[in-house]
Image (cartoon, rainbow, N blue to C red; front, top):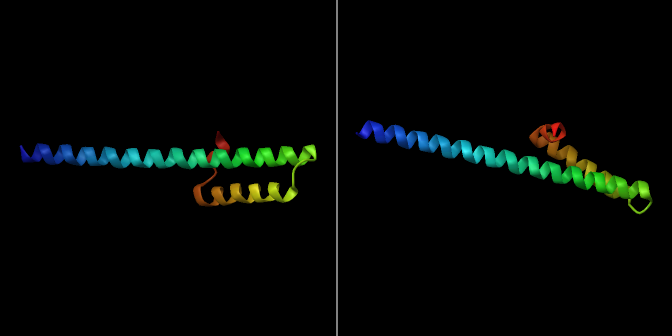
Length: 77
């Protein structure tokens, strides 16, 4: 009986770990998507003459930093 409980506990722990990893991936993707939206909005505002090129540059740098830290998965939407 103890062996069964140990295996069940191990499987539950593995499931929790996988679930946490998936949540982290989703949160990273969401954060990247938000950065891309900000970049698009900054670029659009700049092209319309109401934005600041520095805001576009800052948004681009934020996207590049996110990609450097987390990979380019946000670009494959």
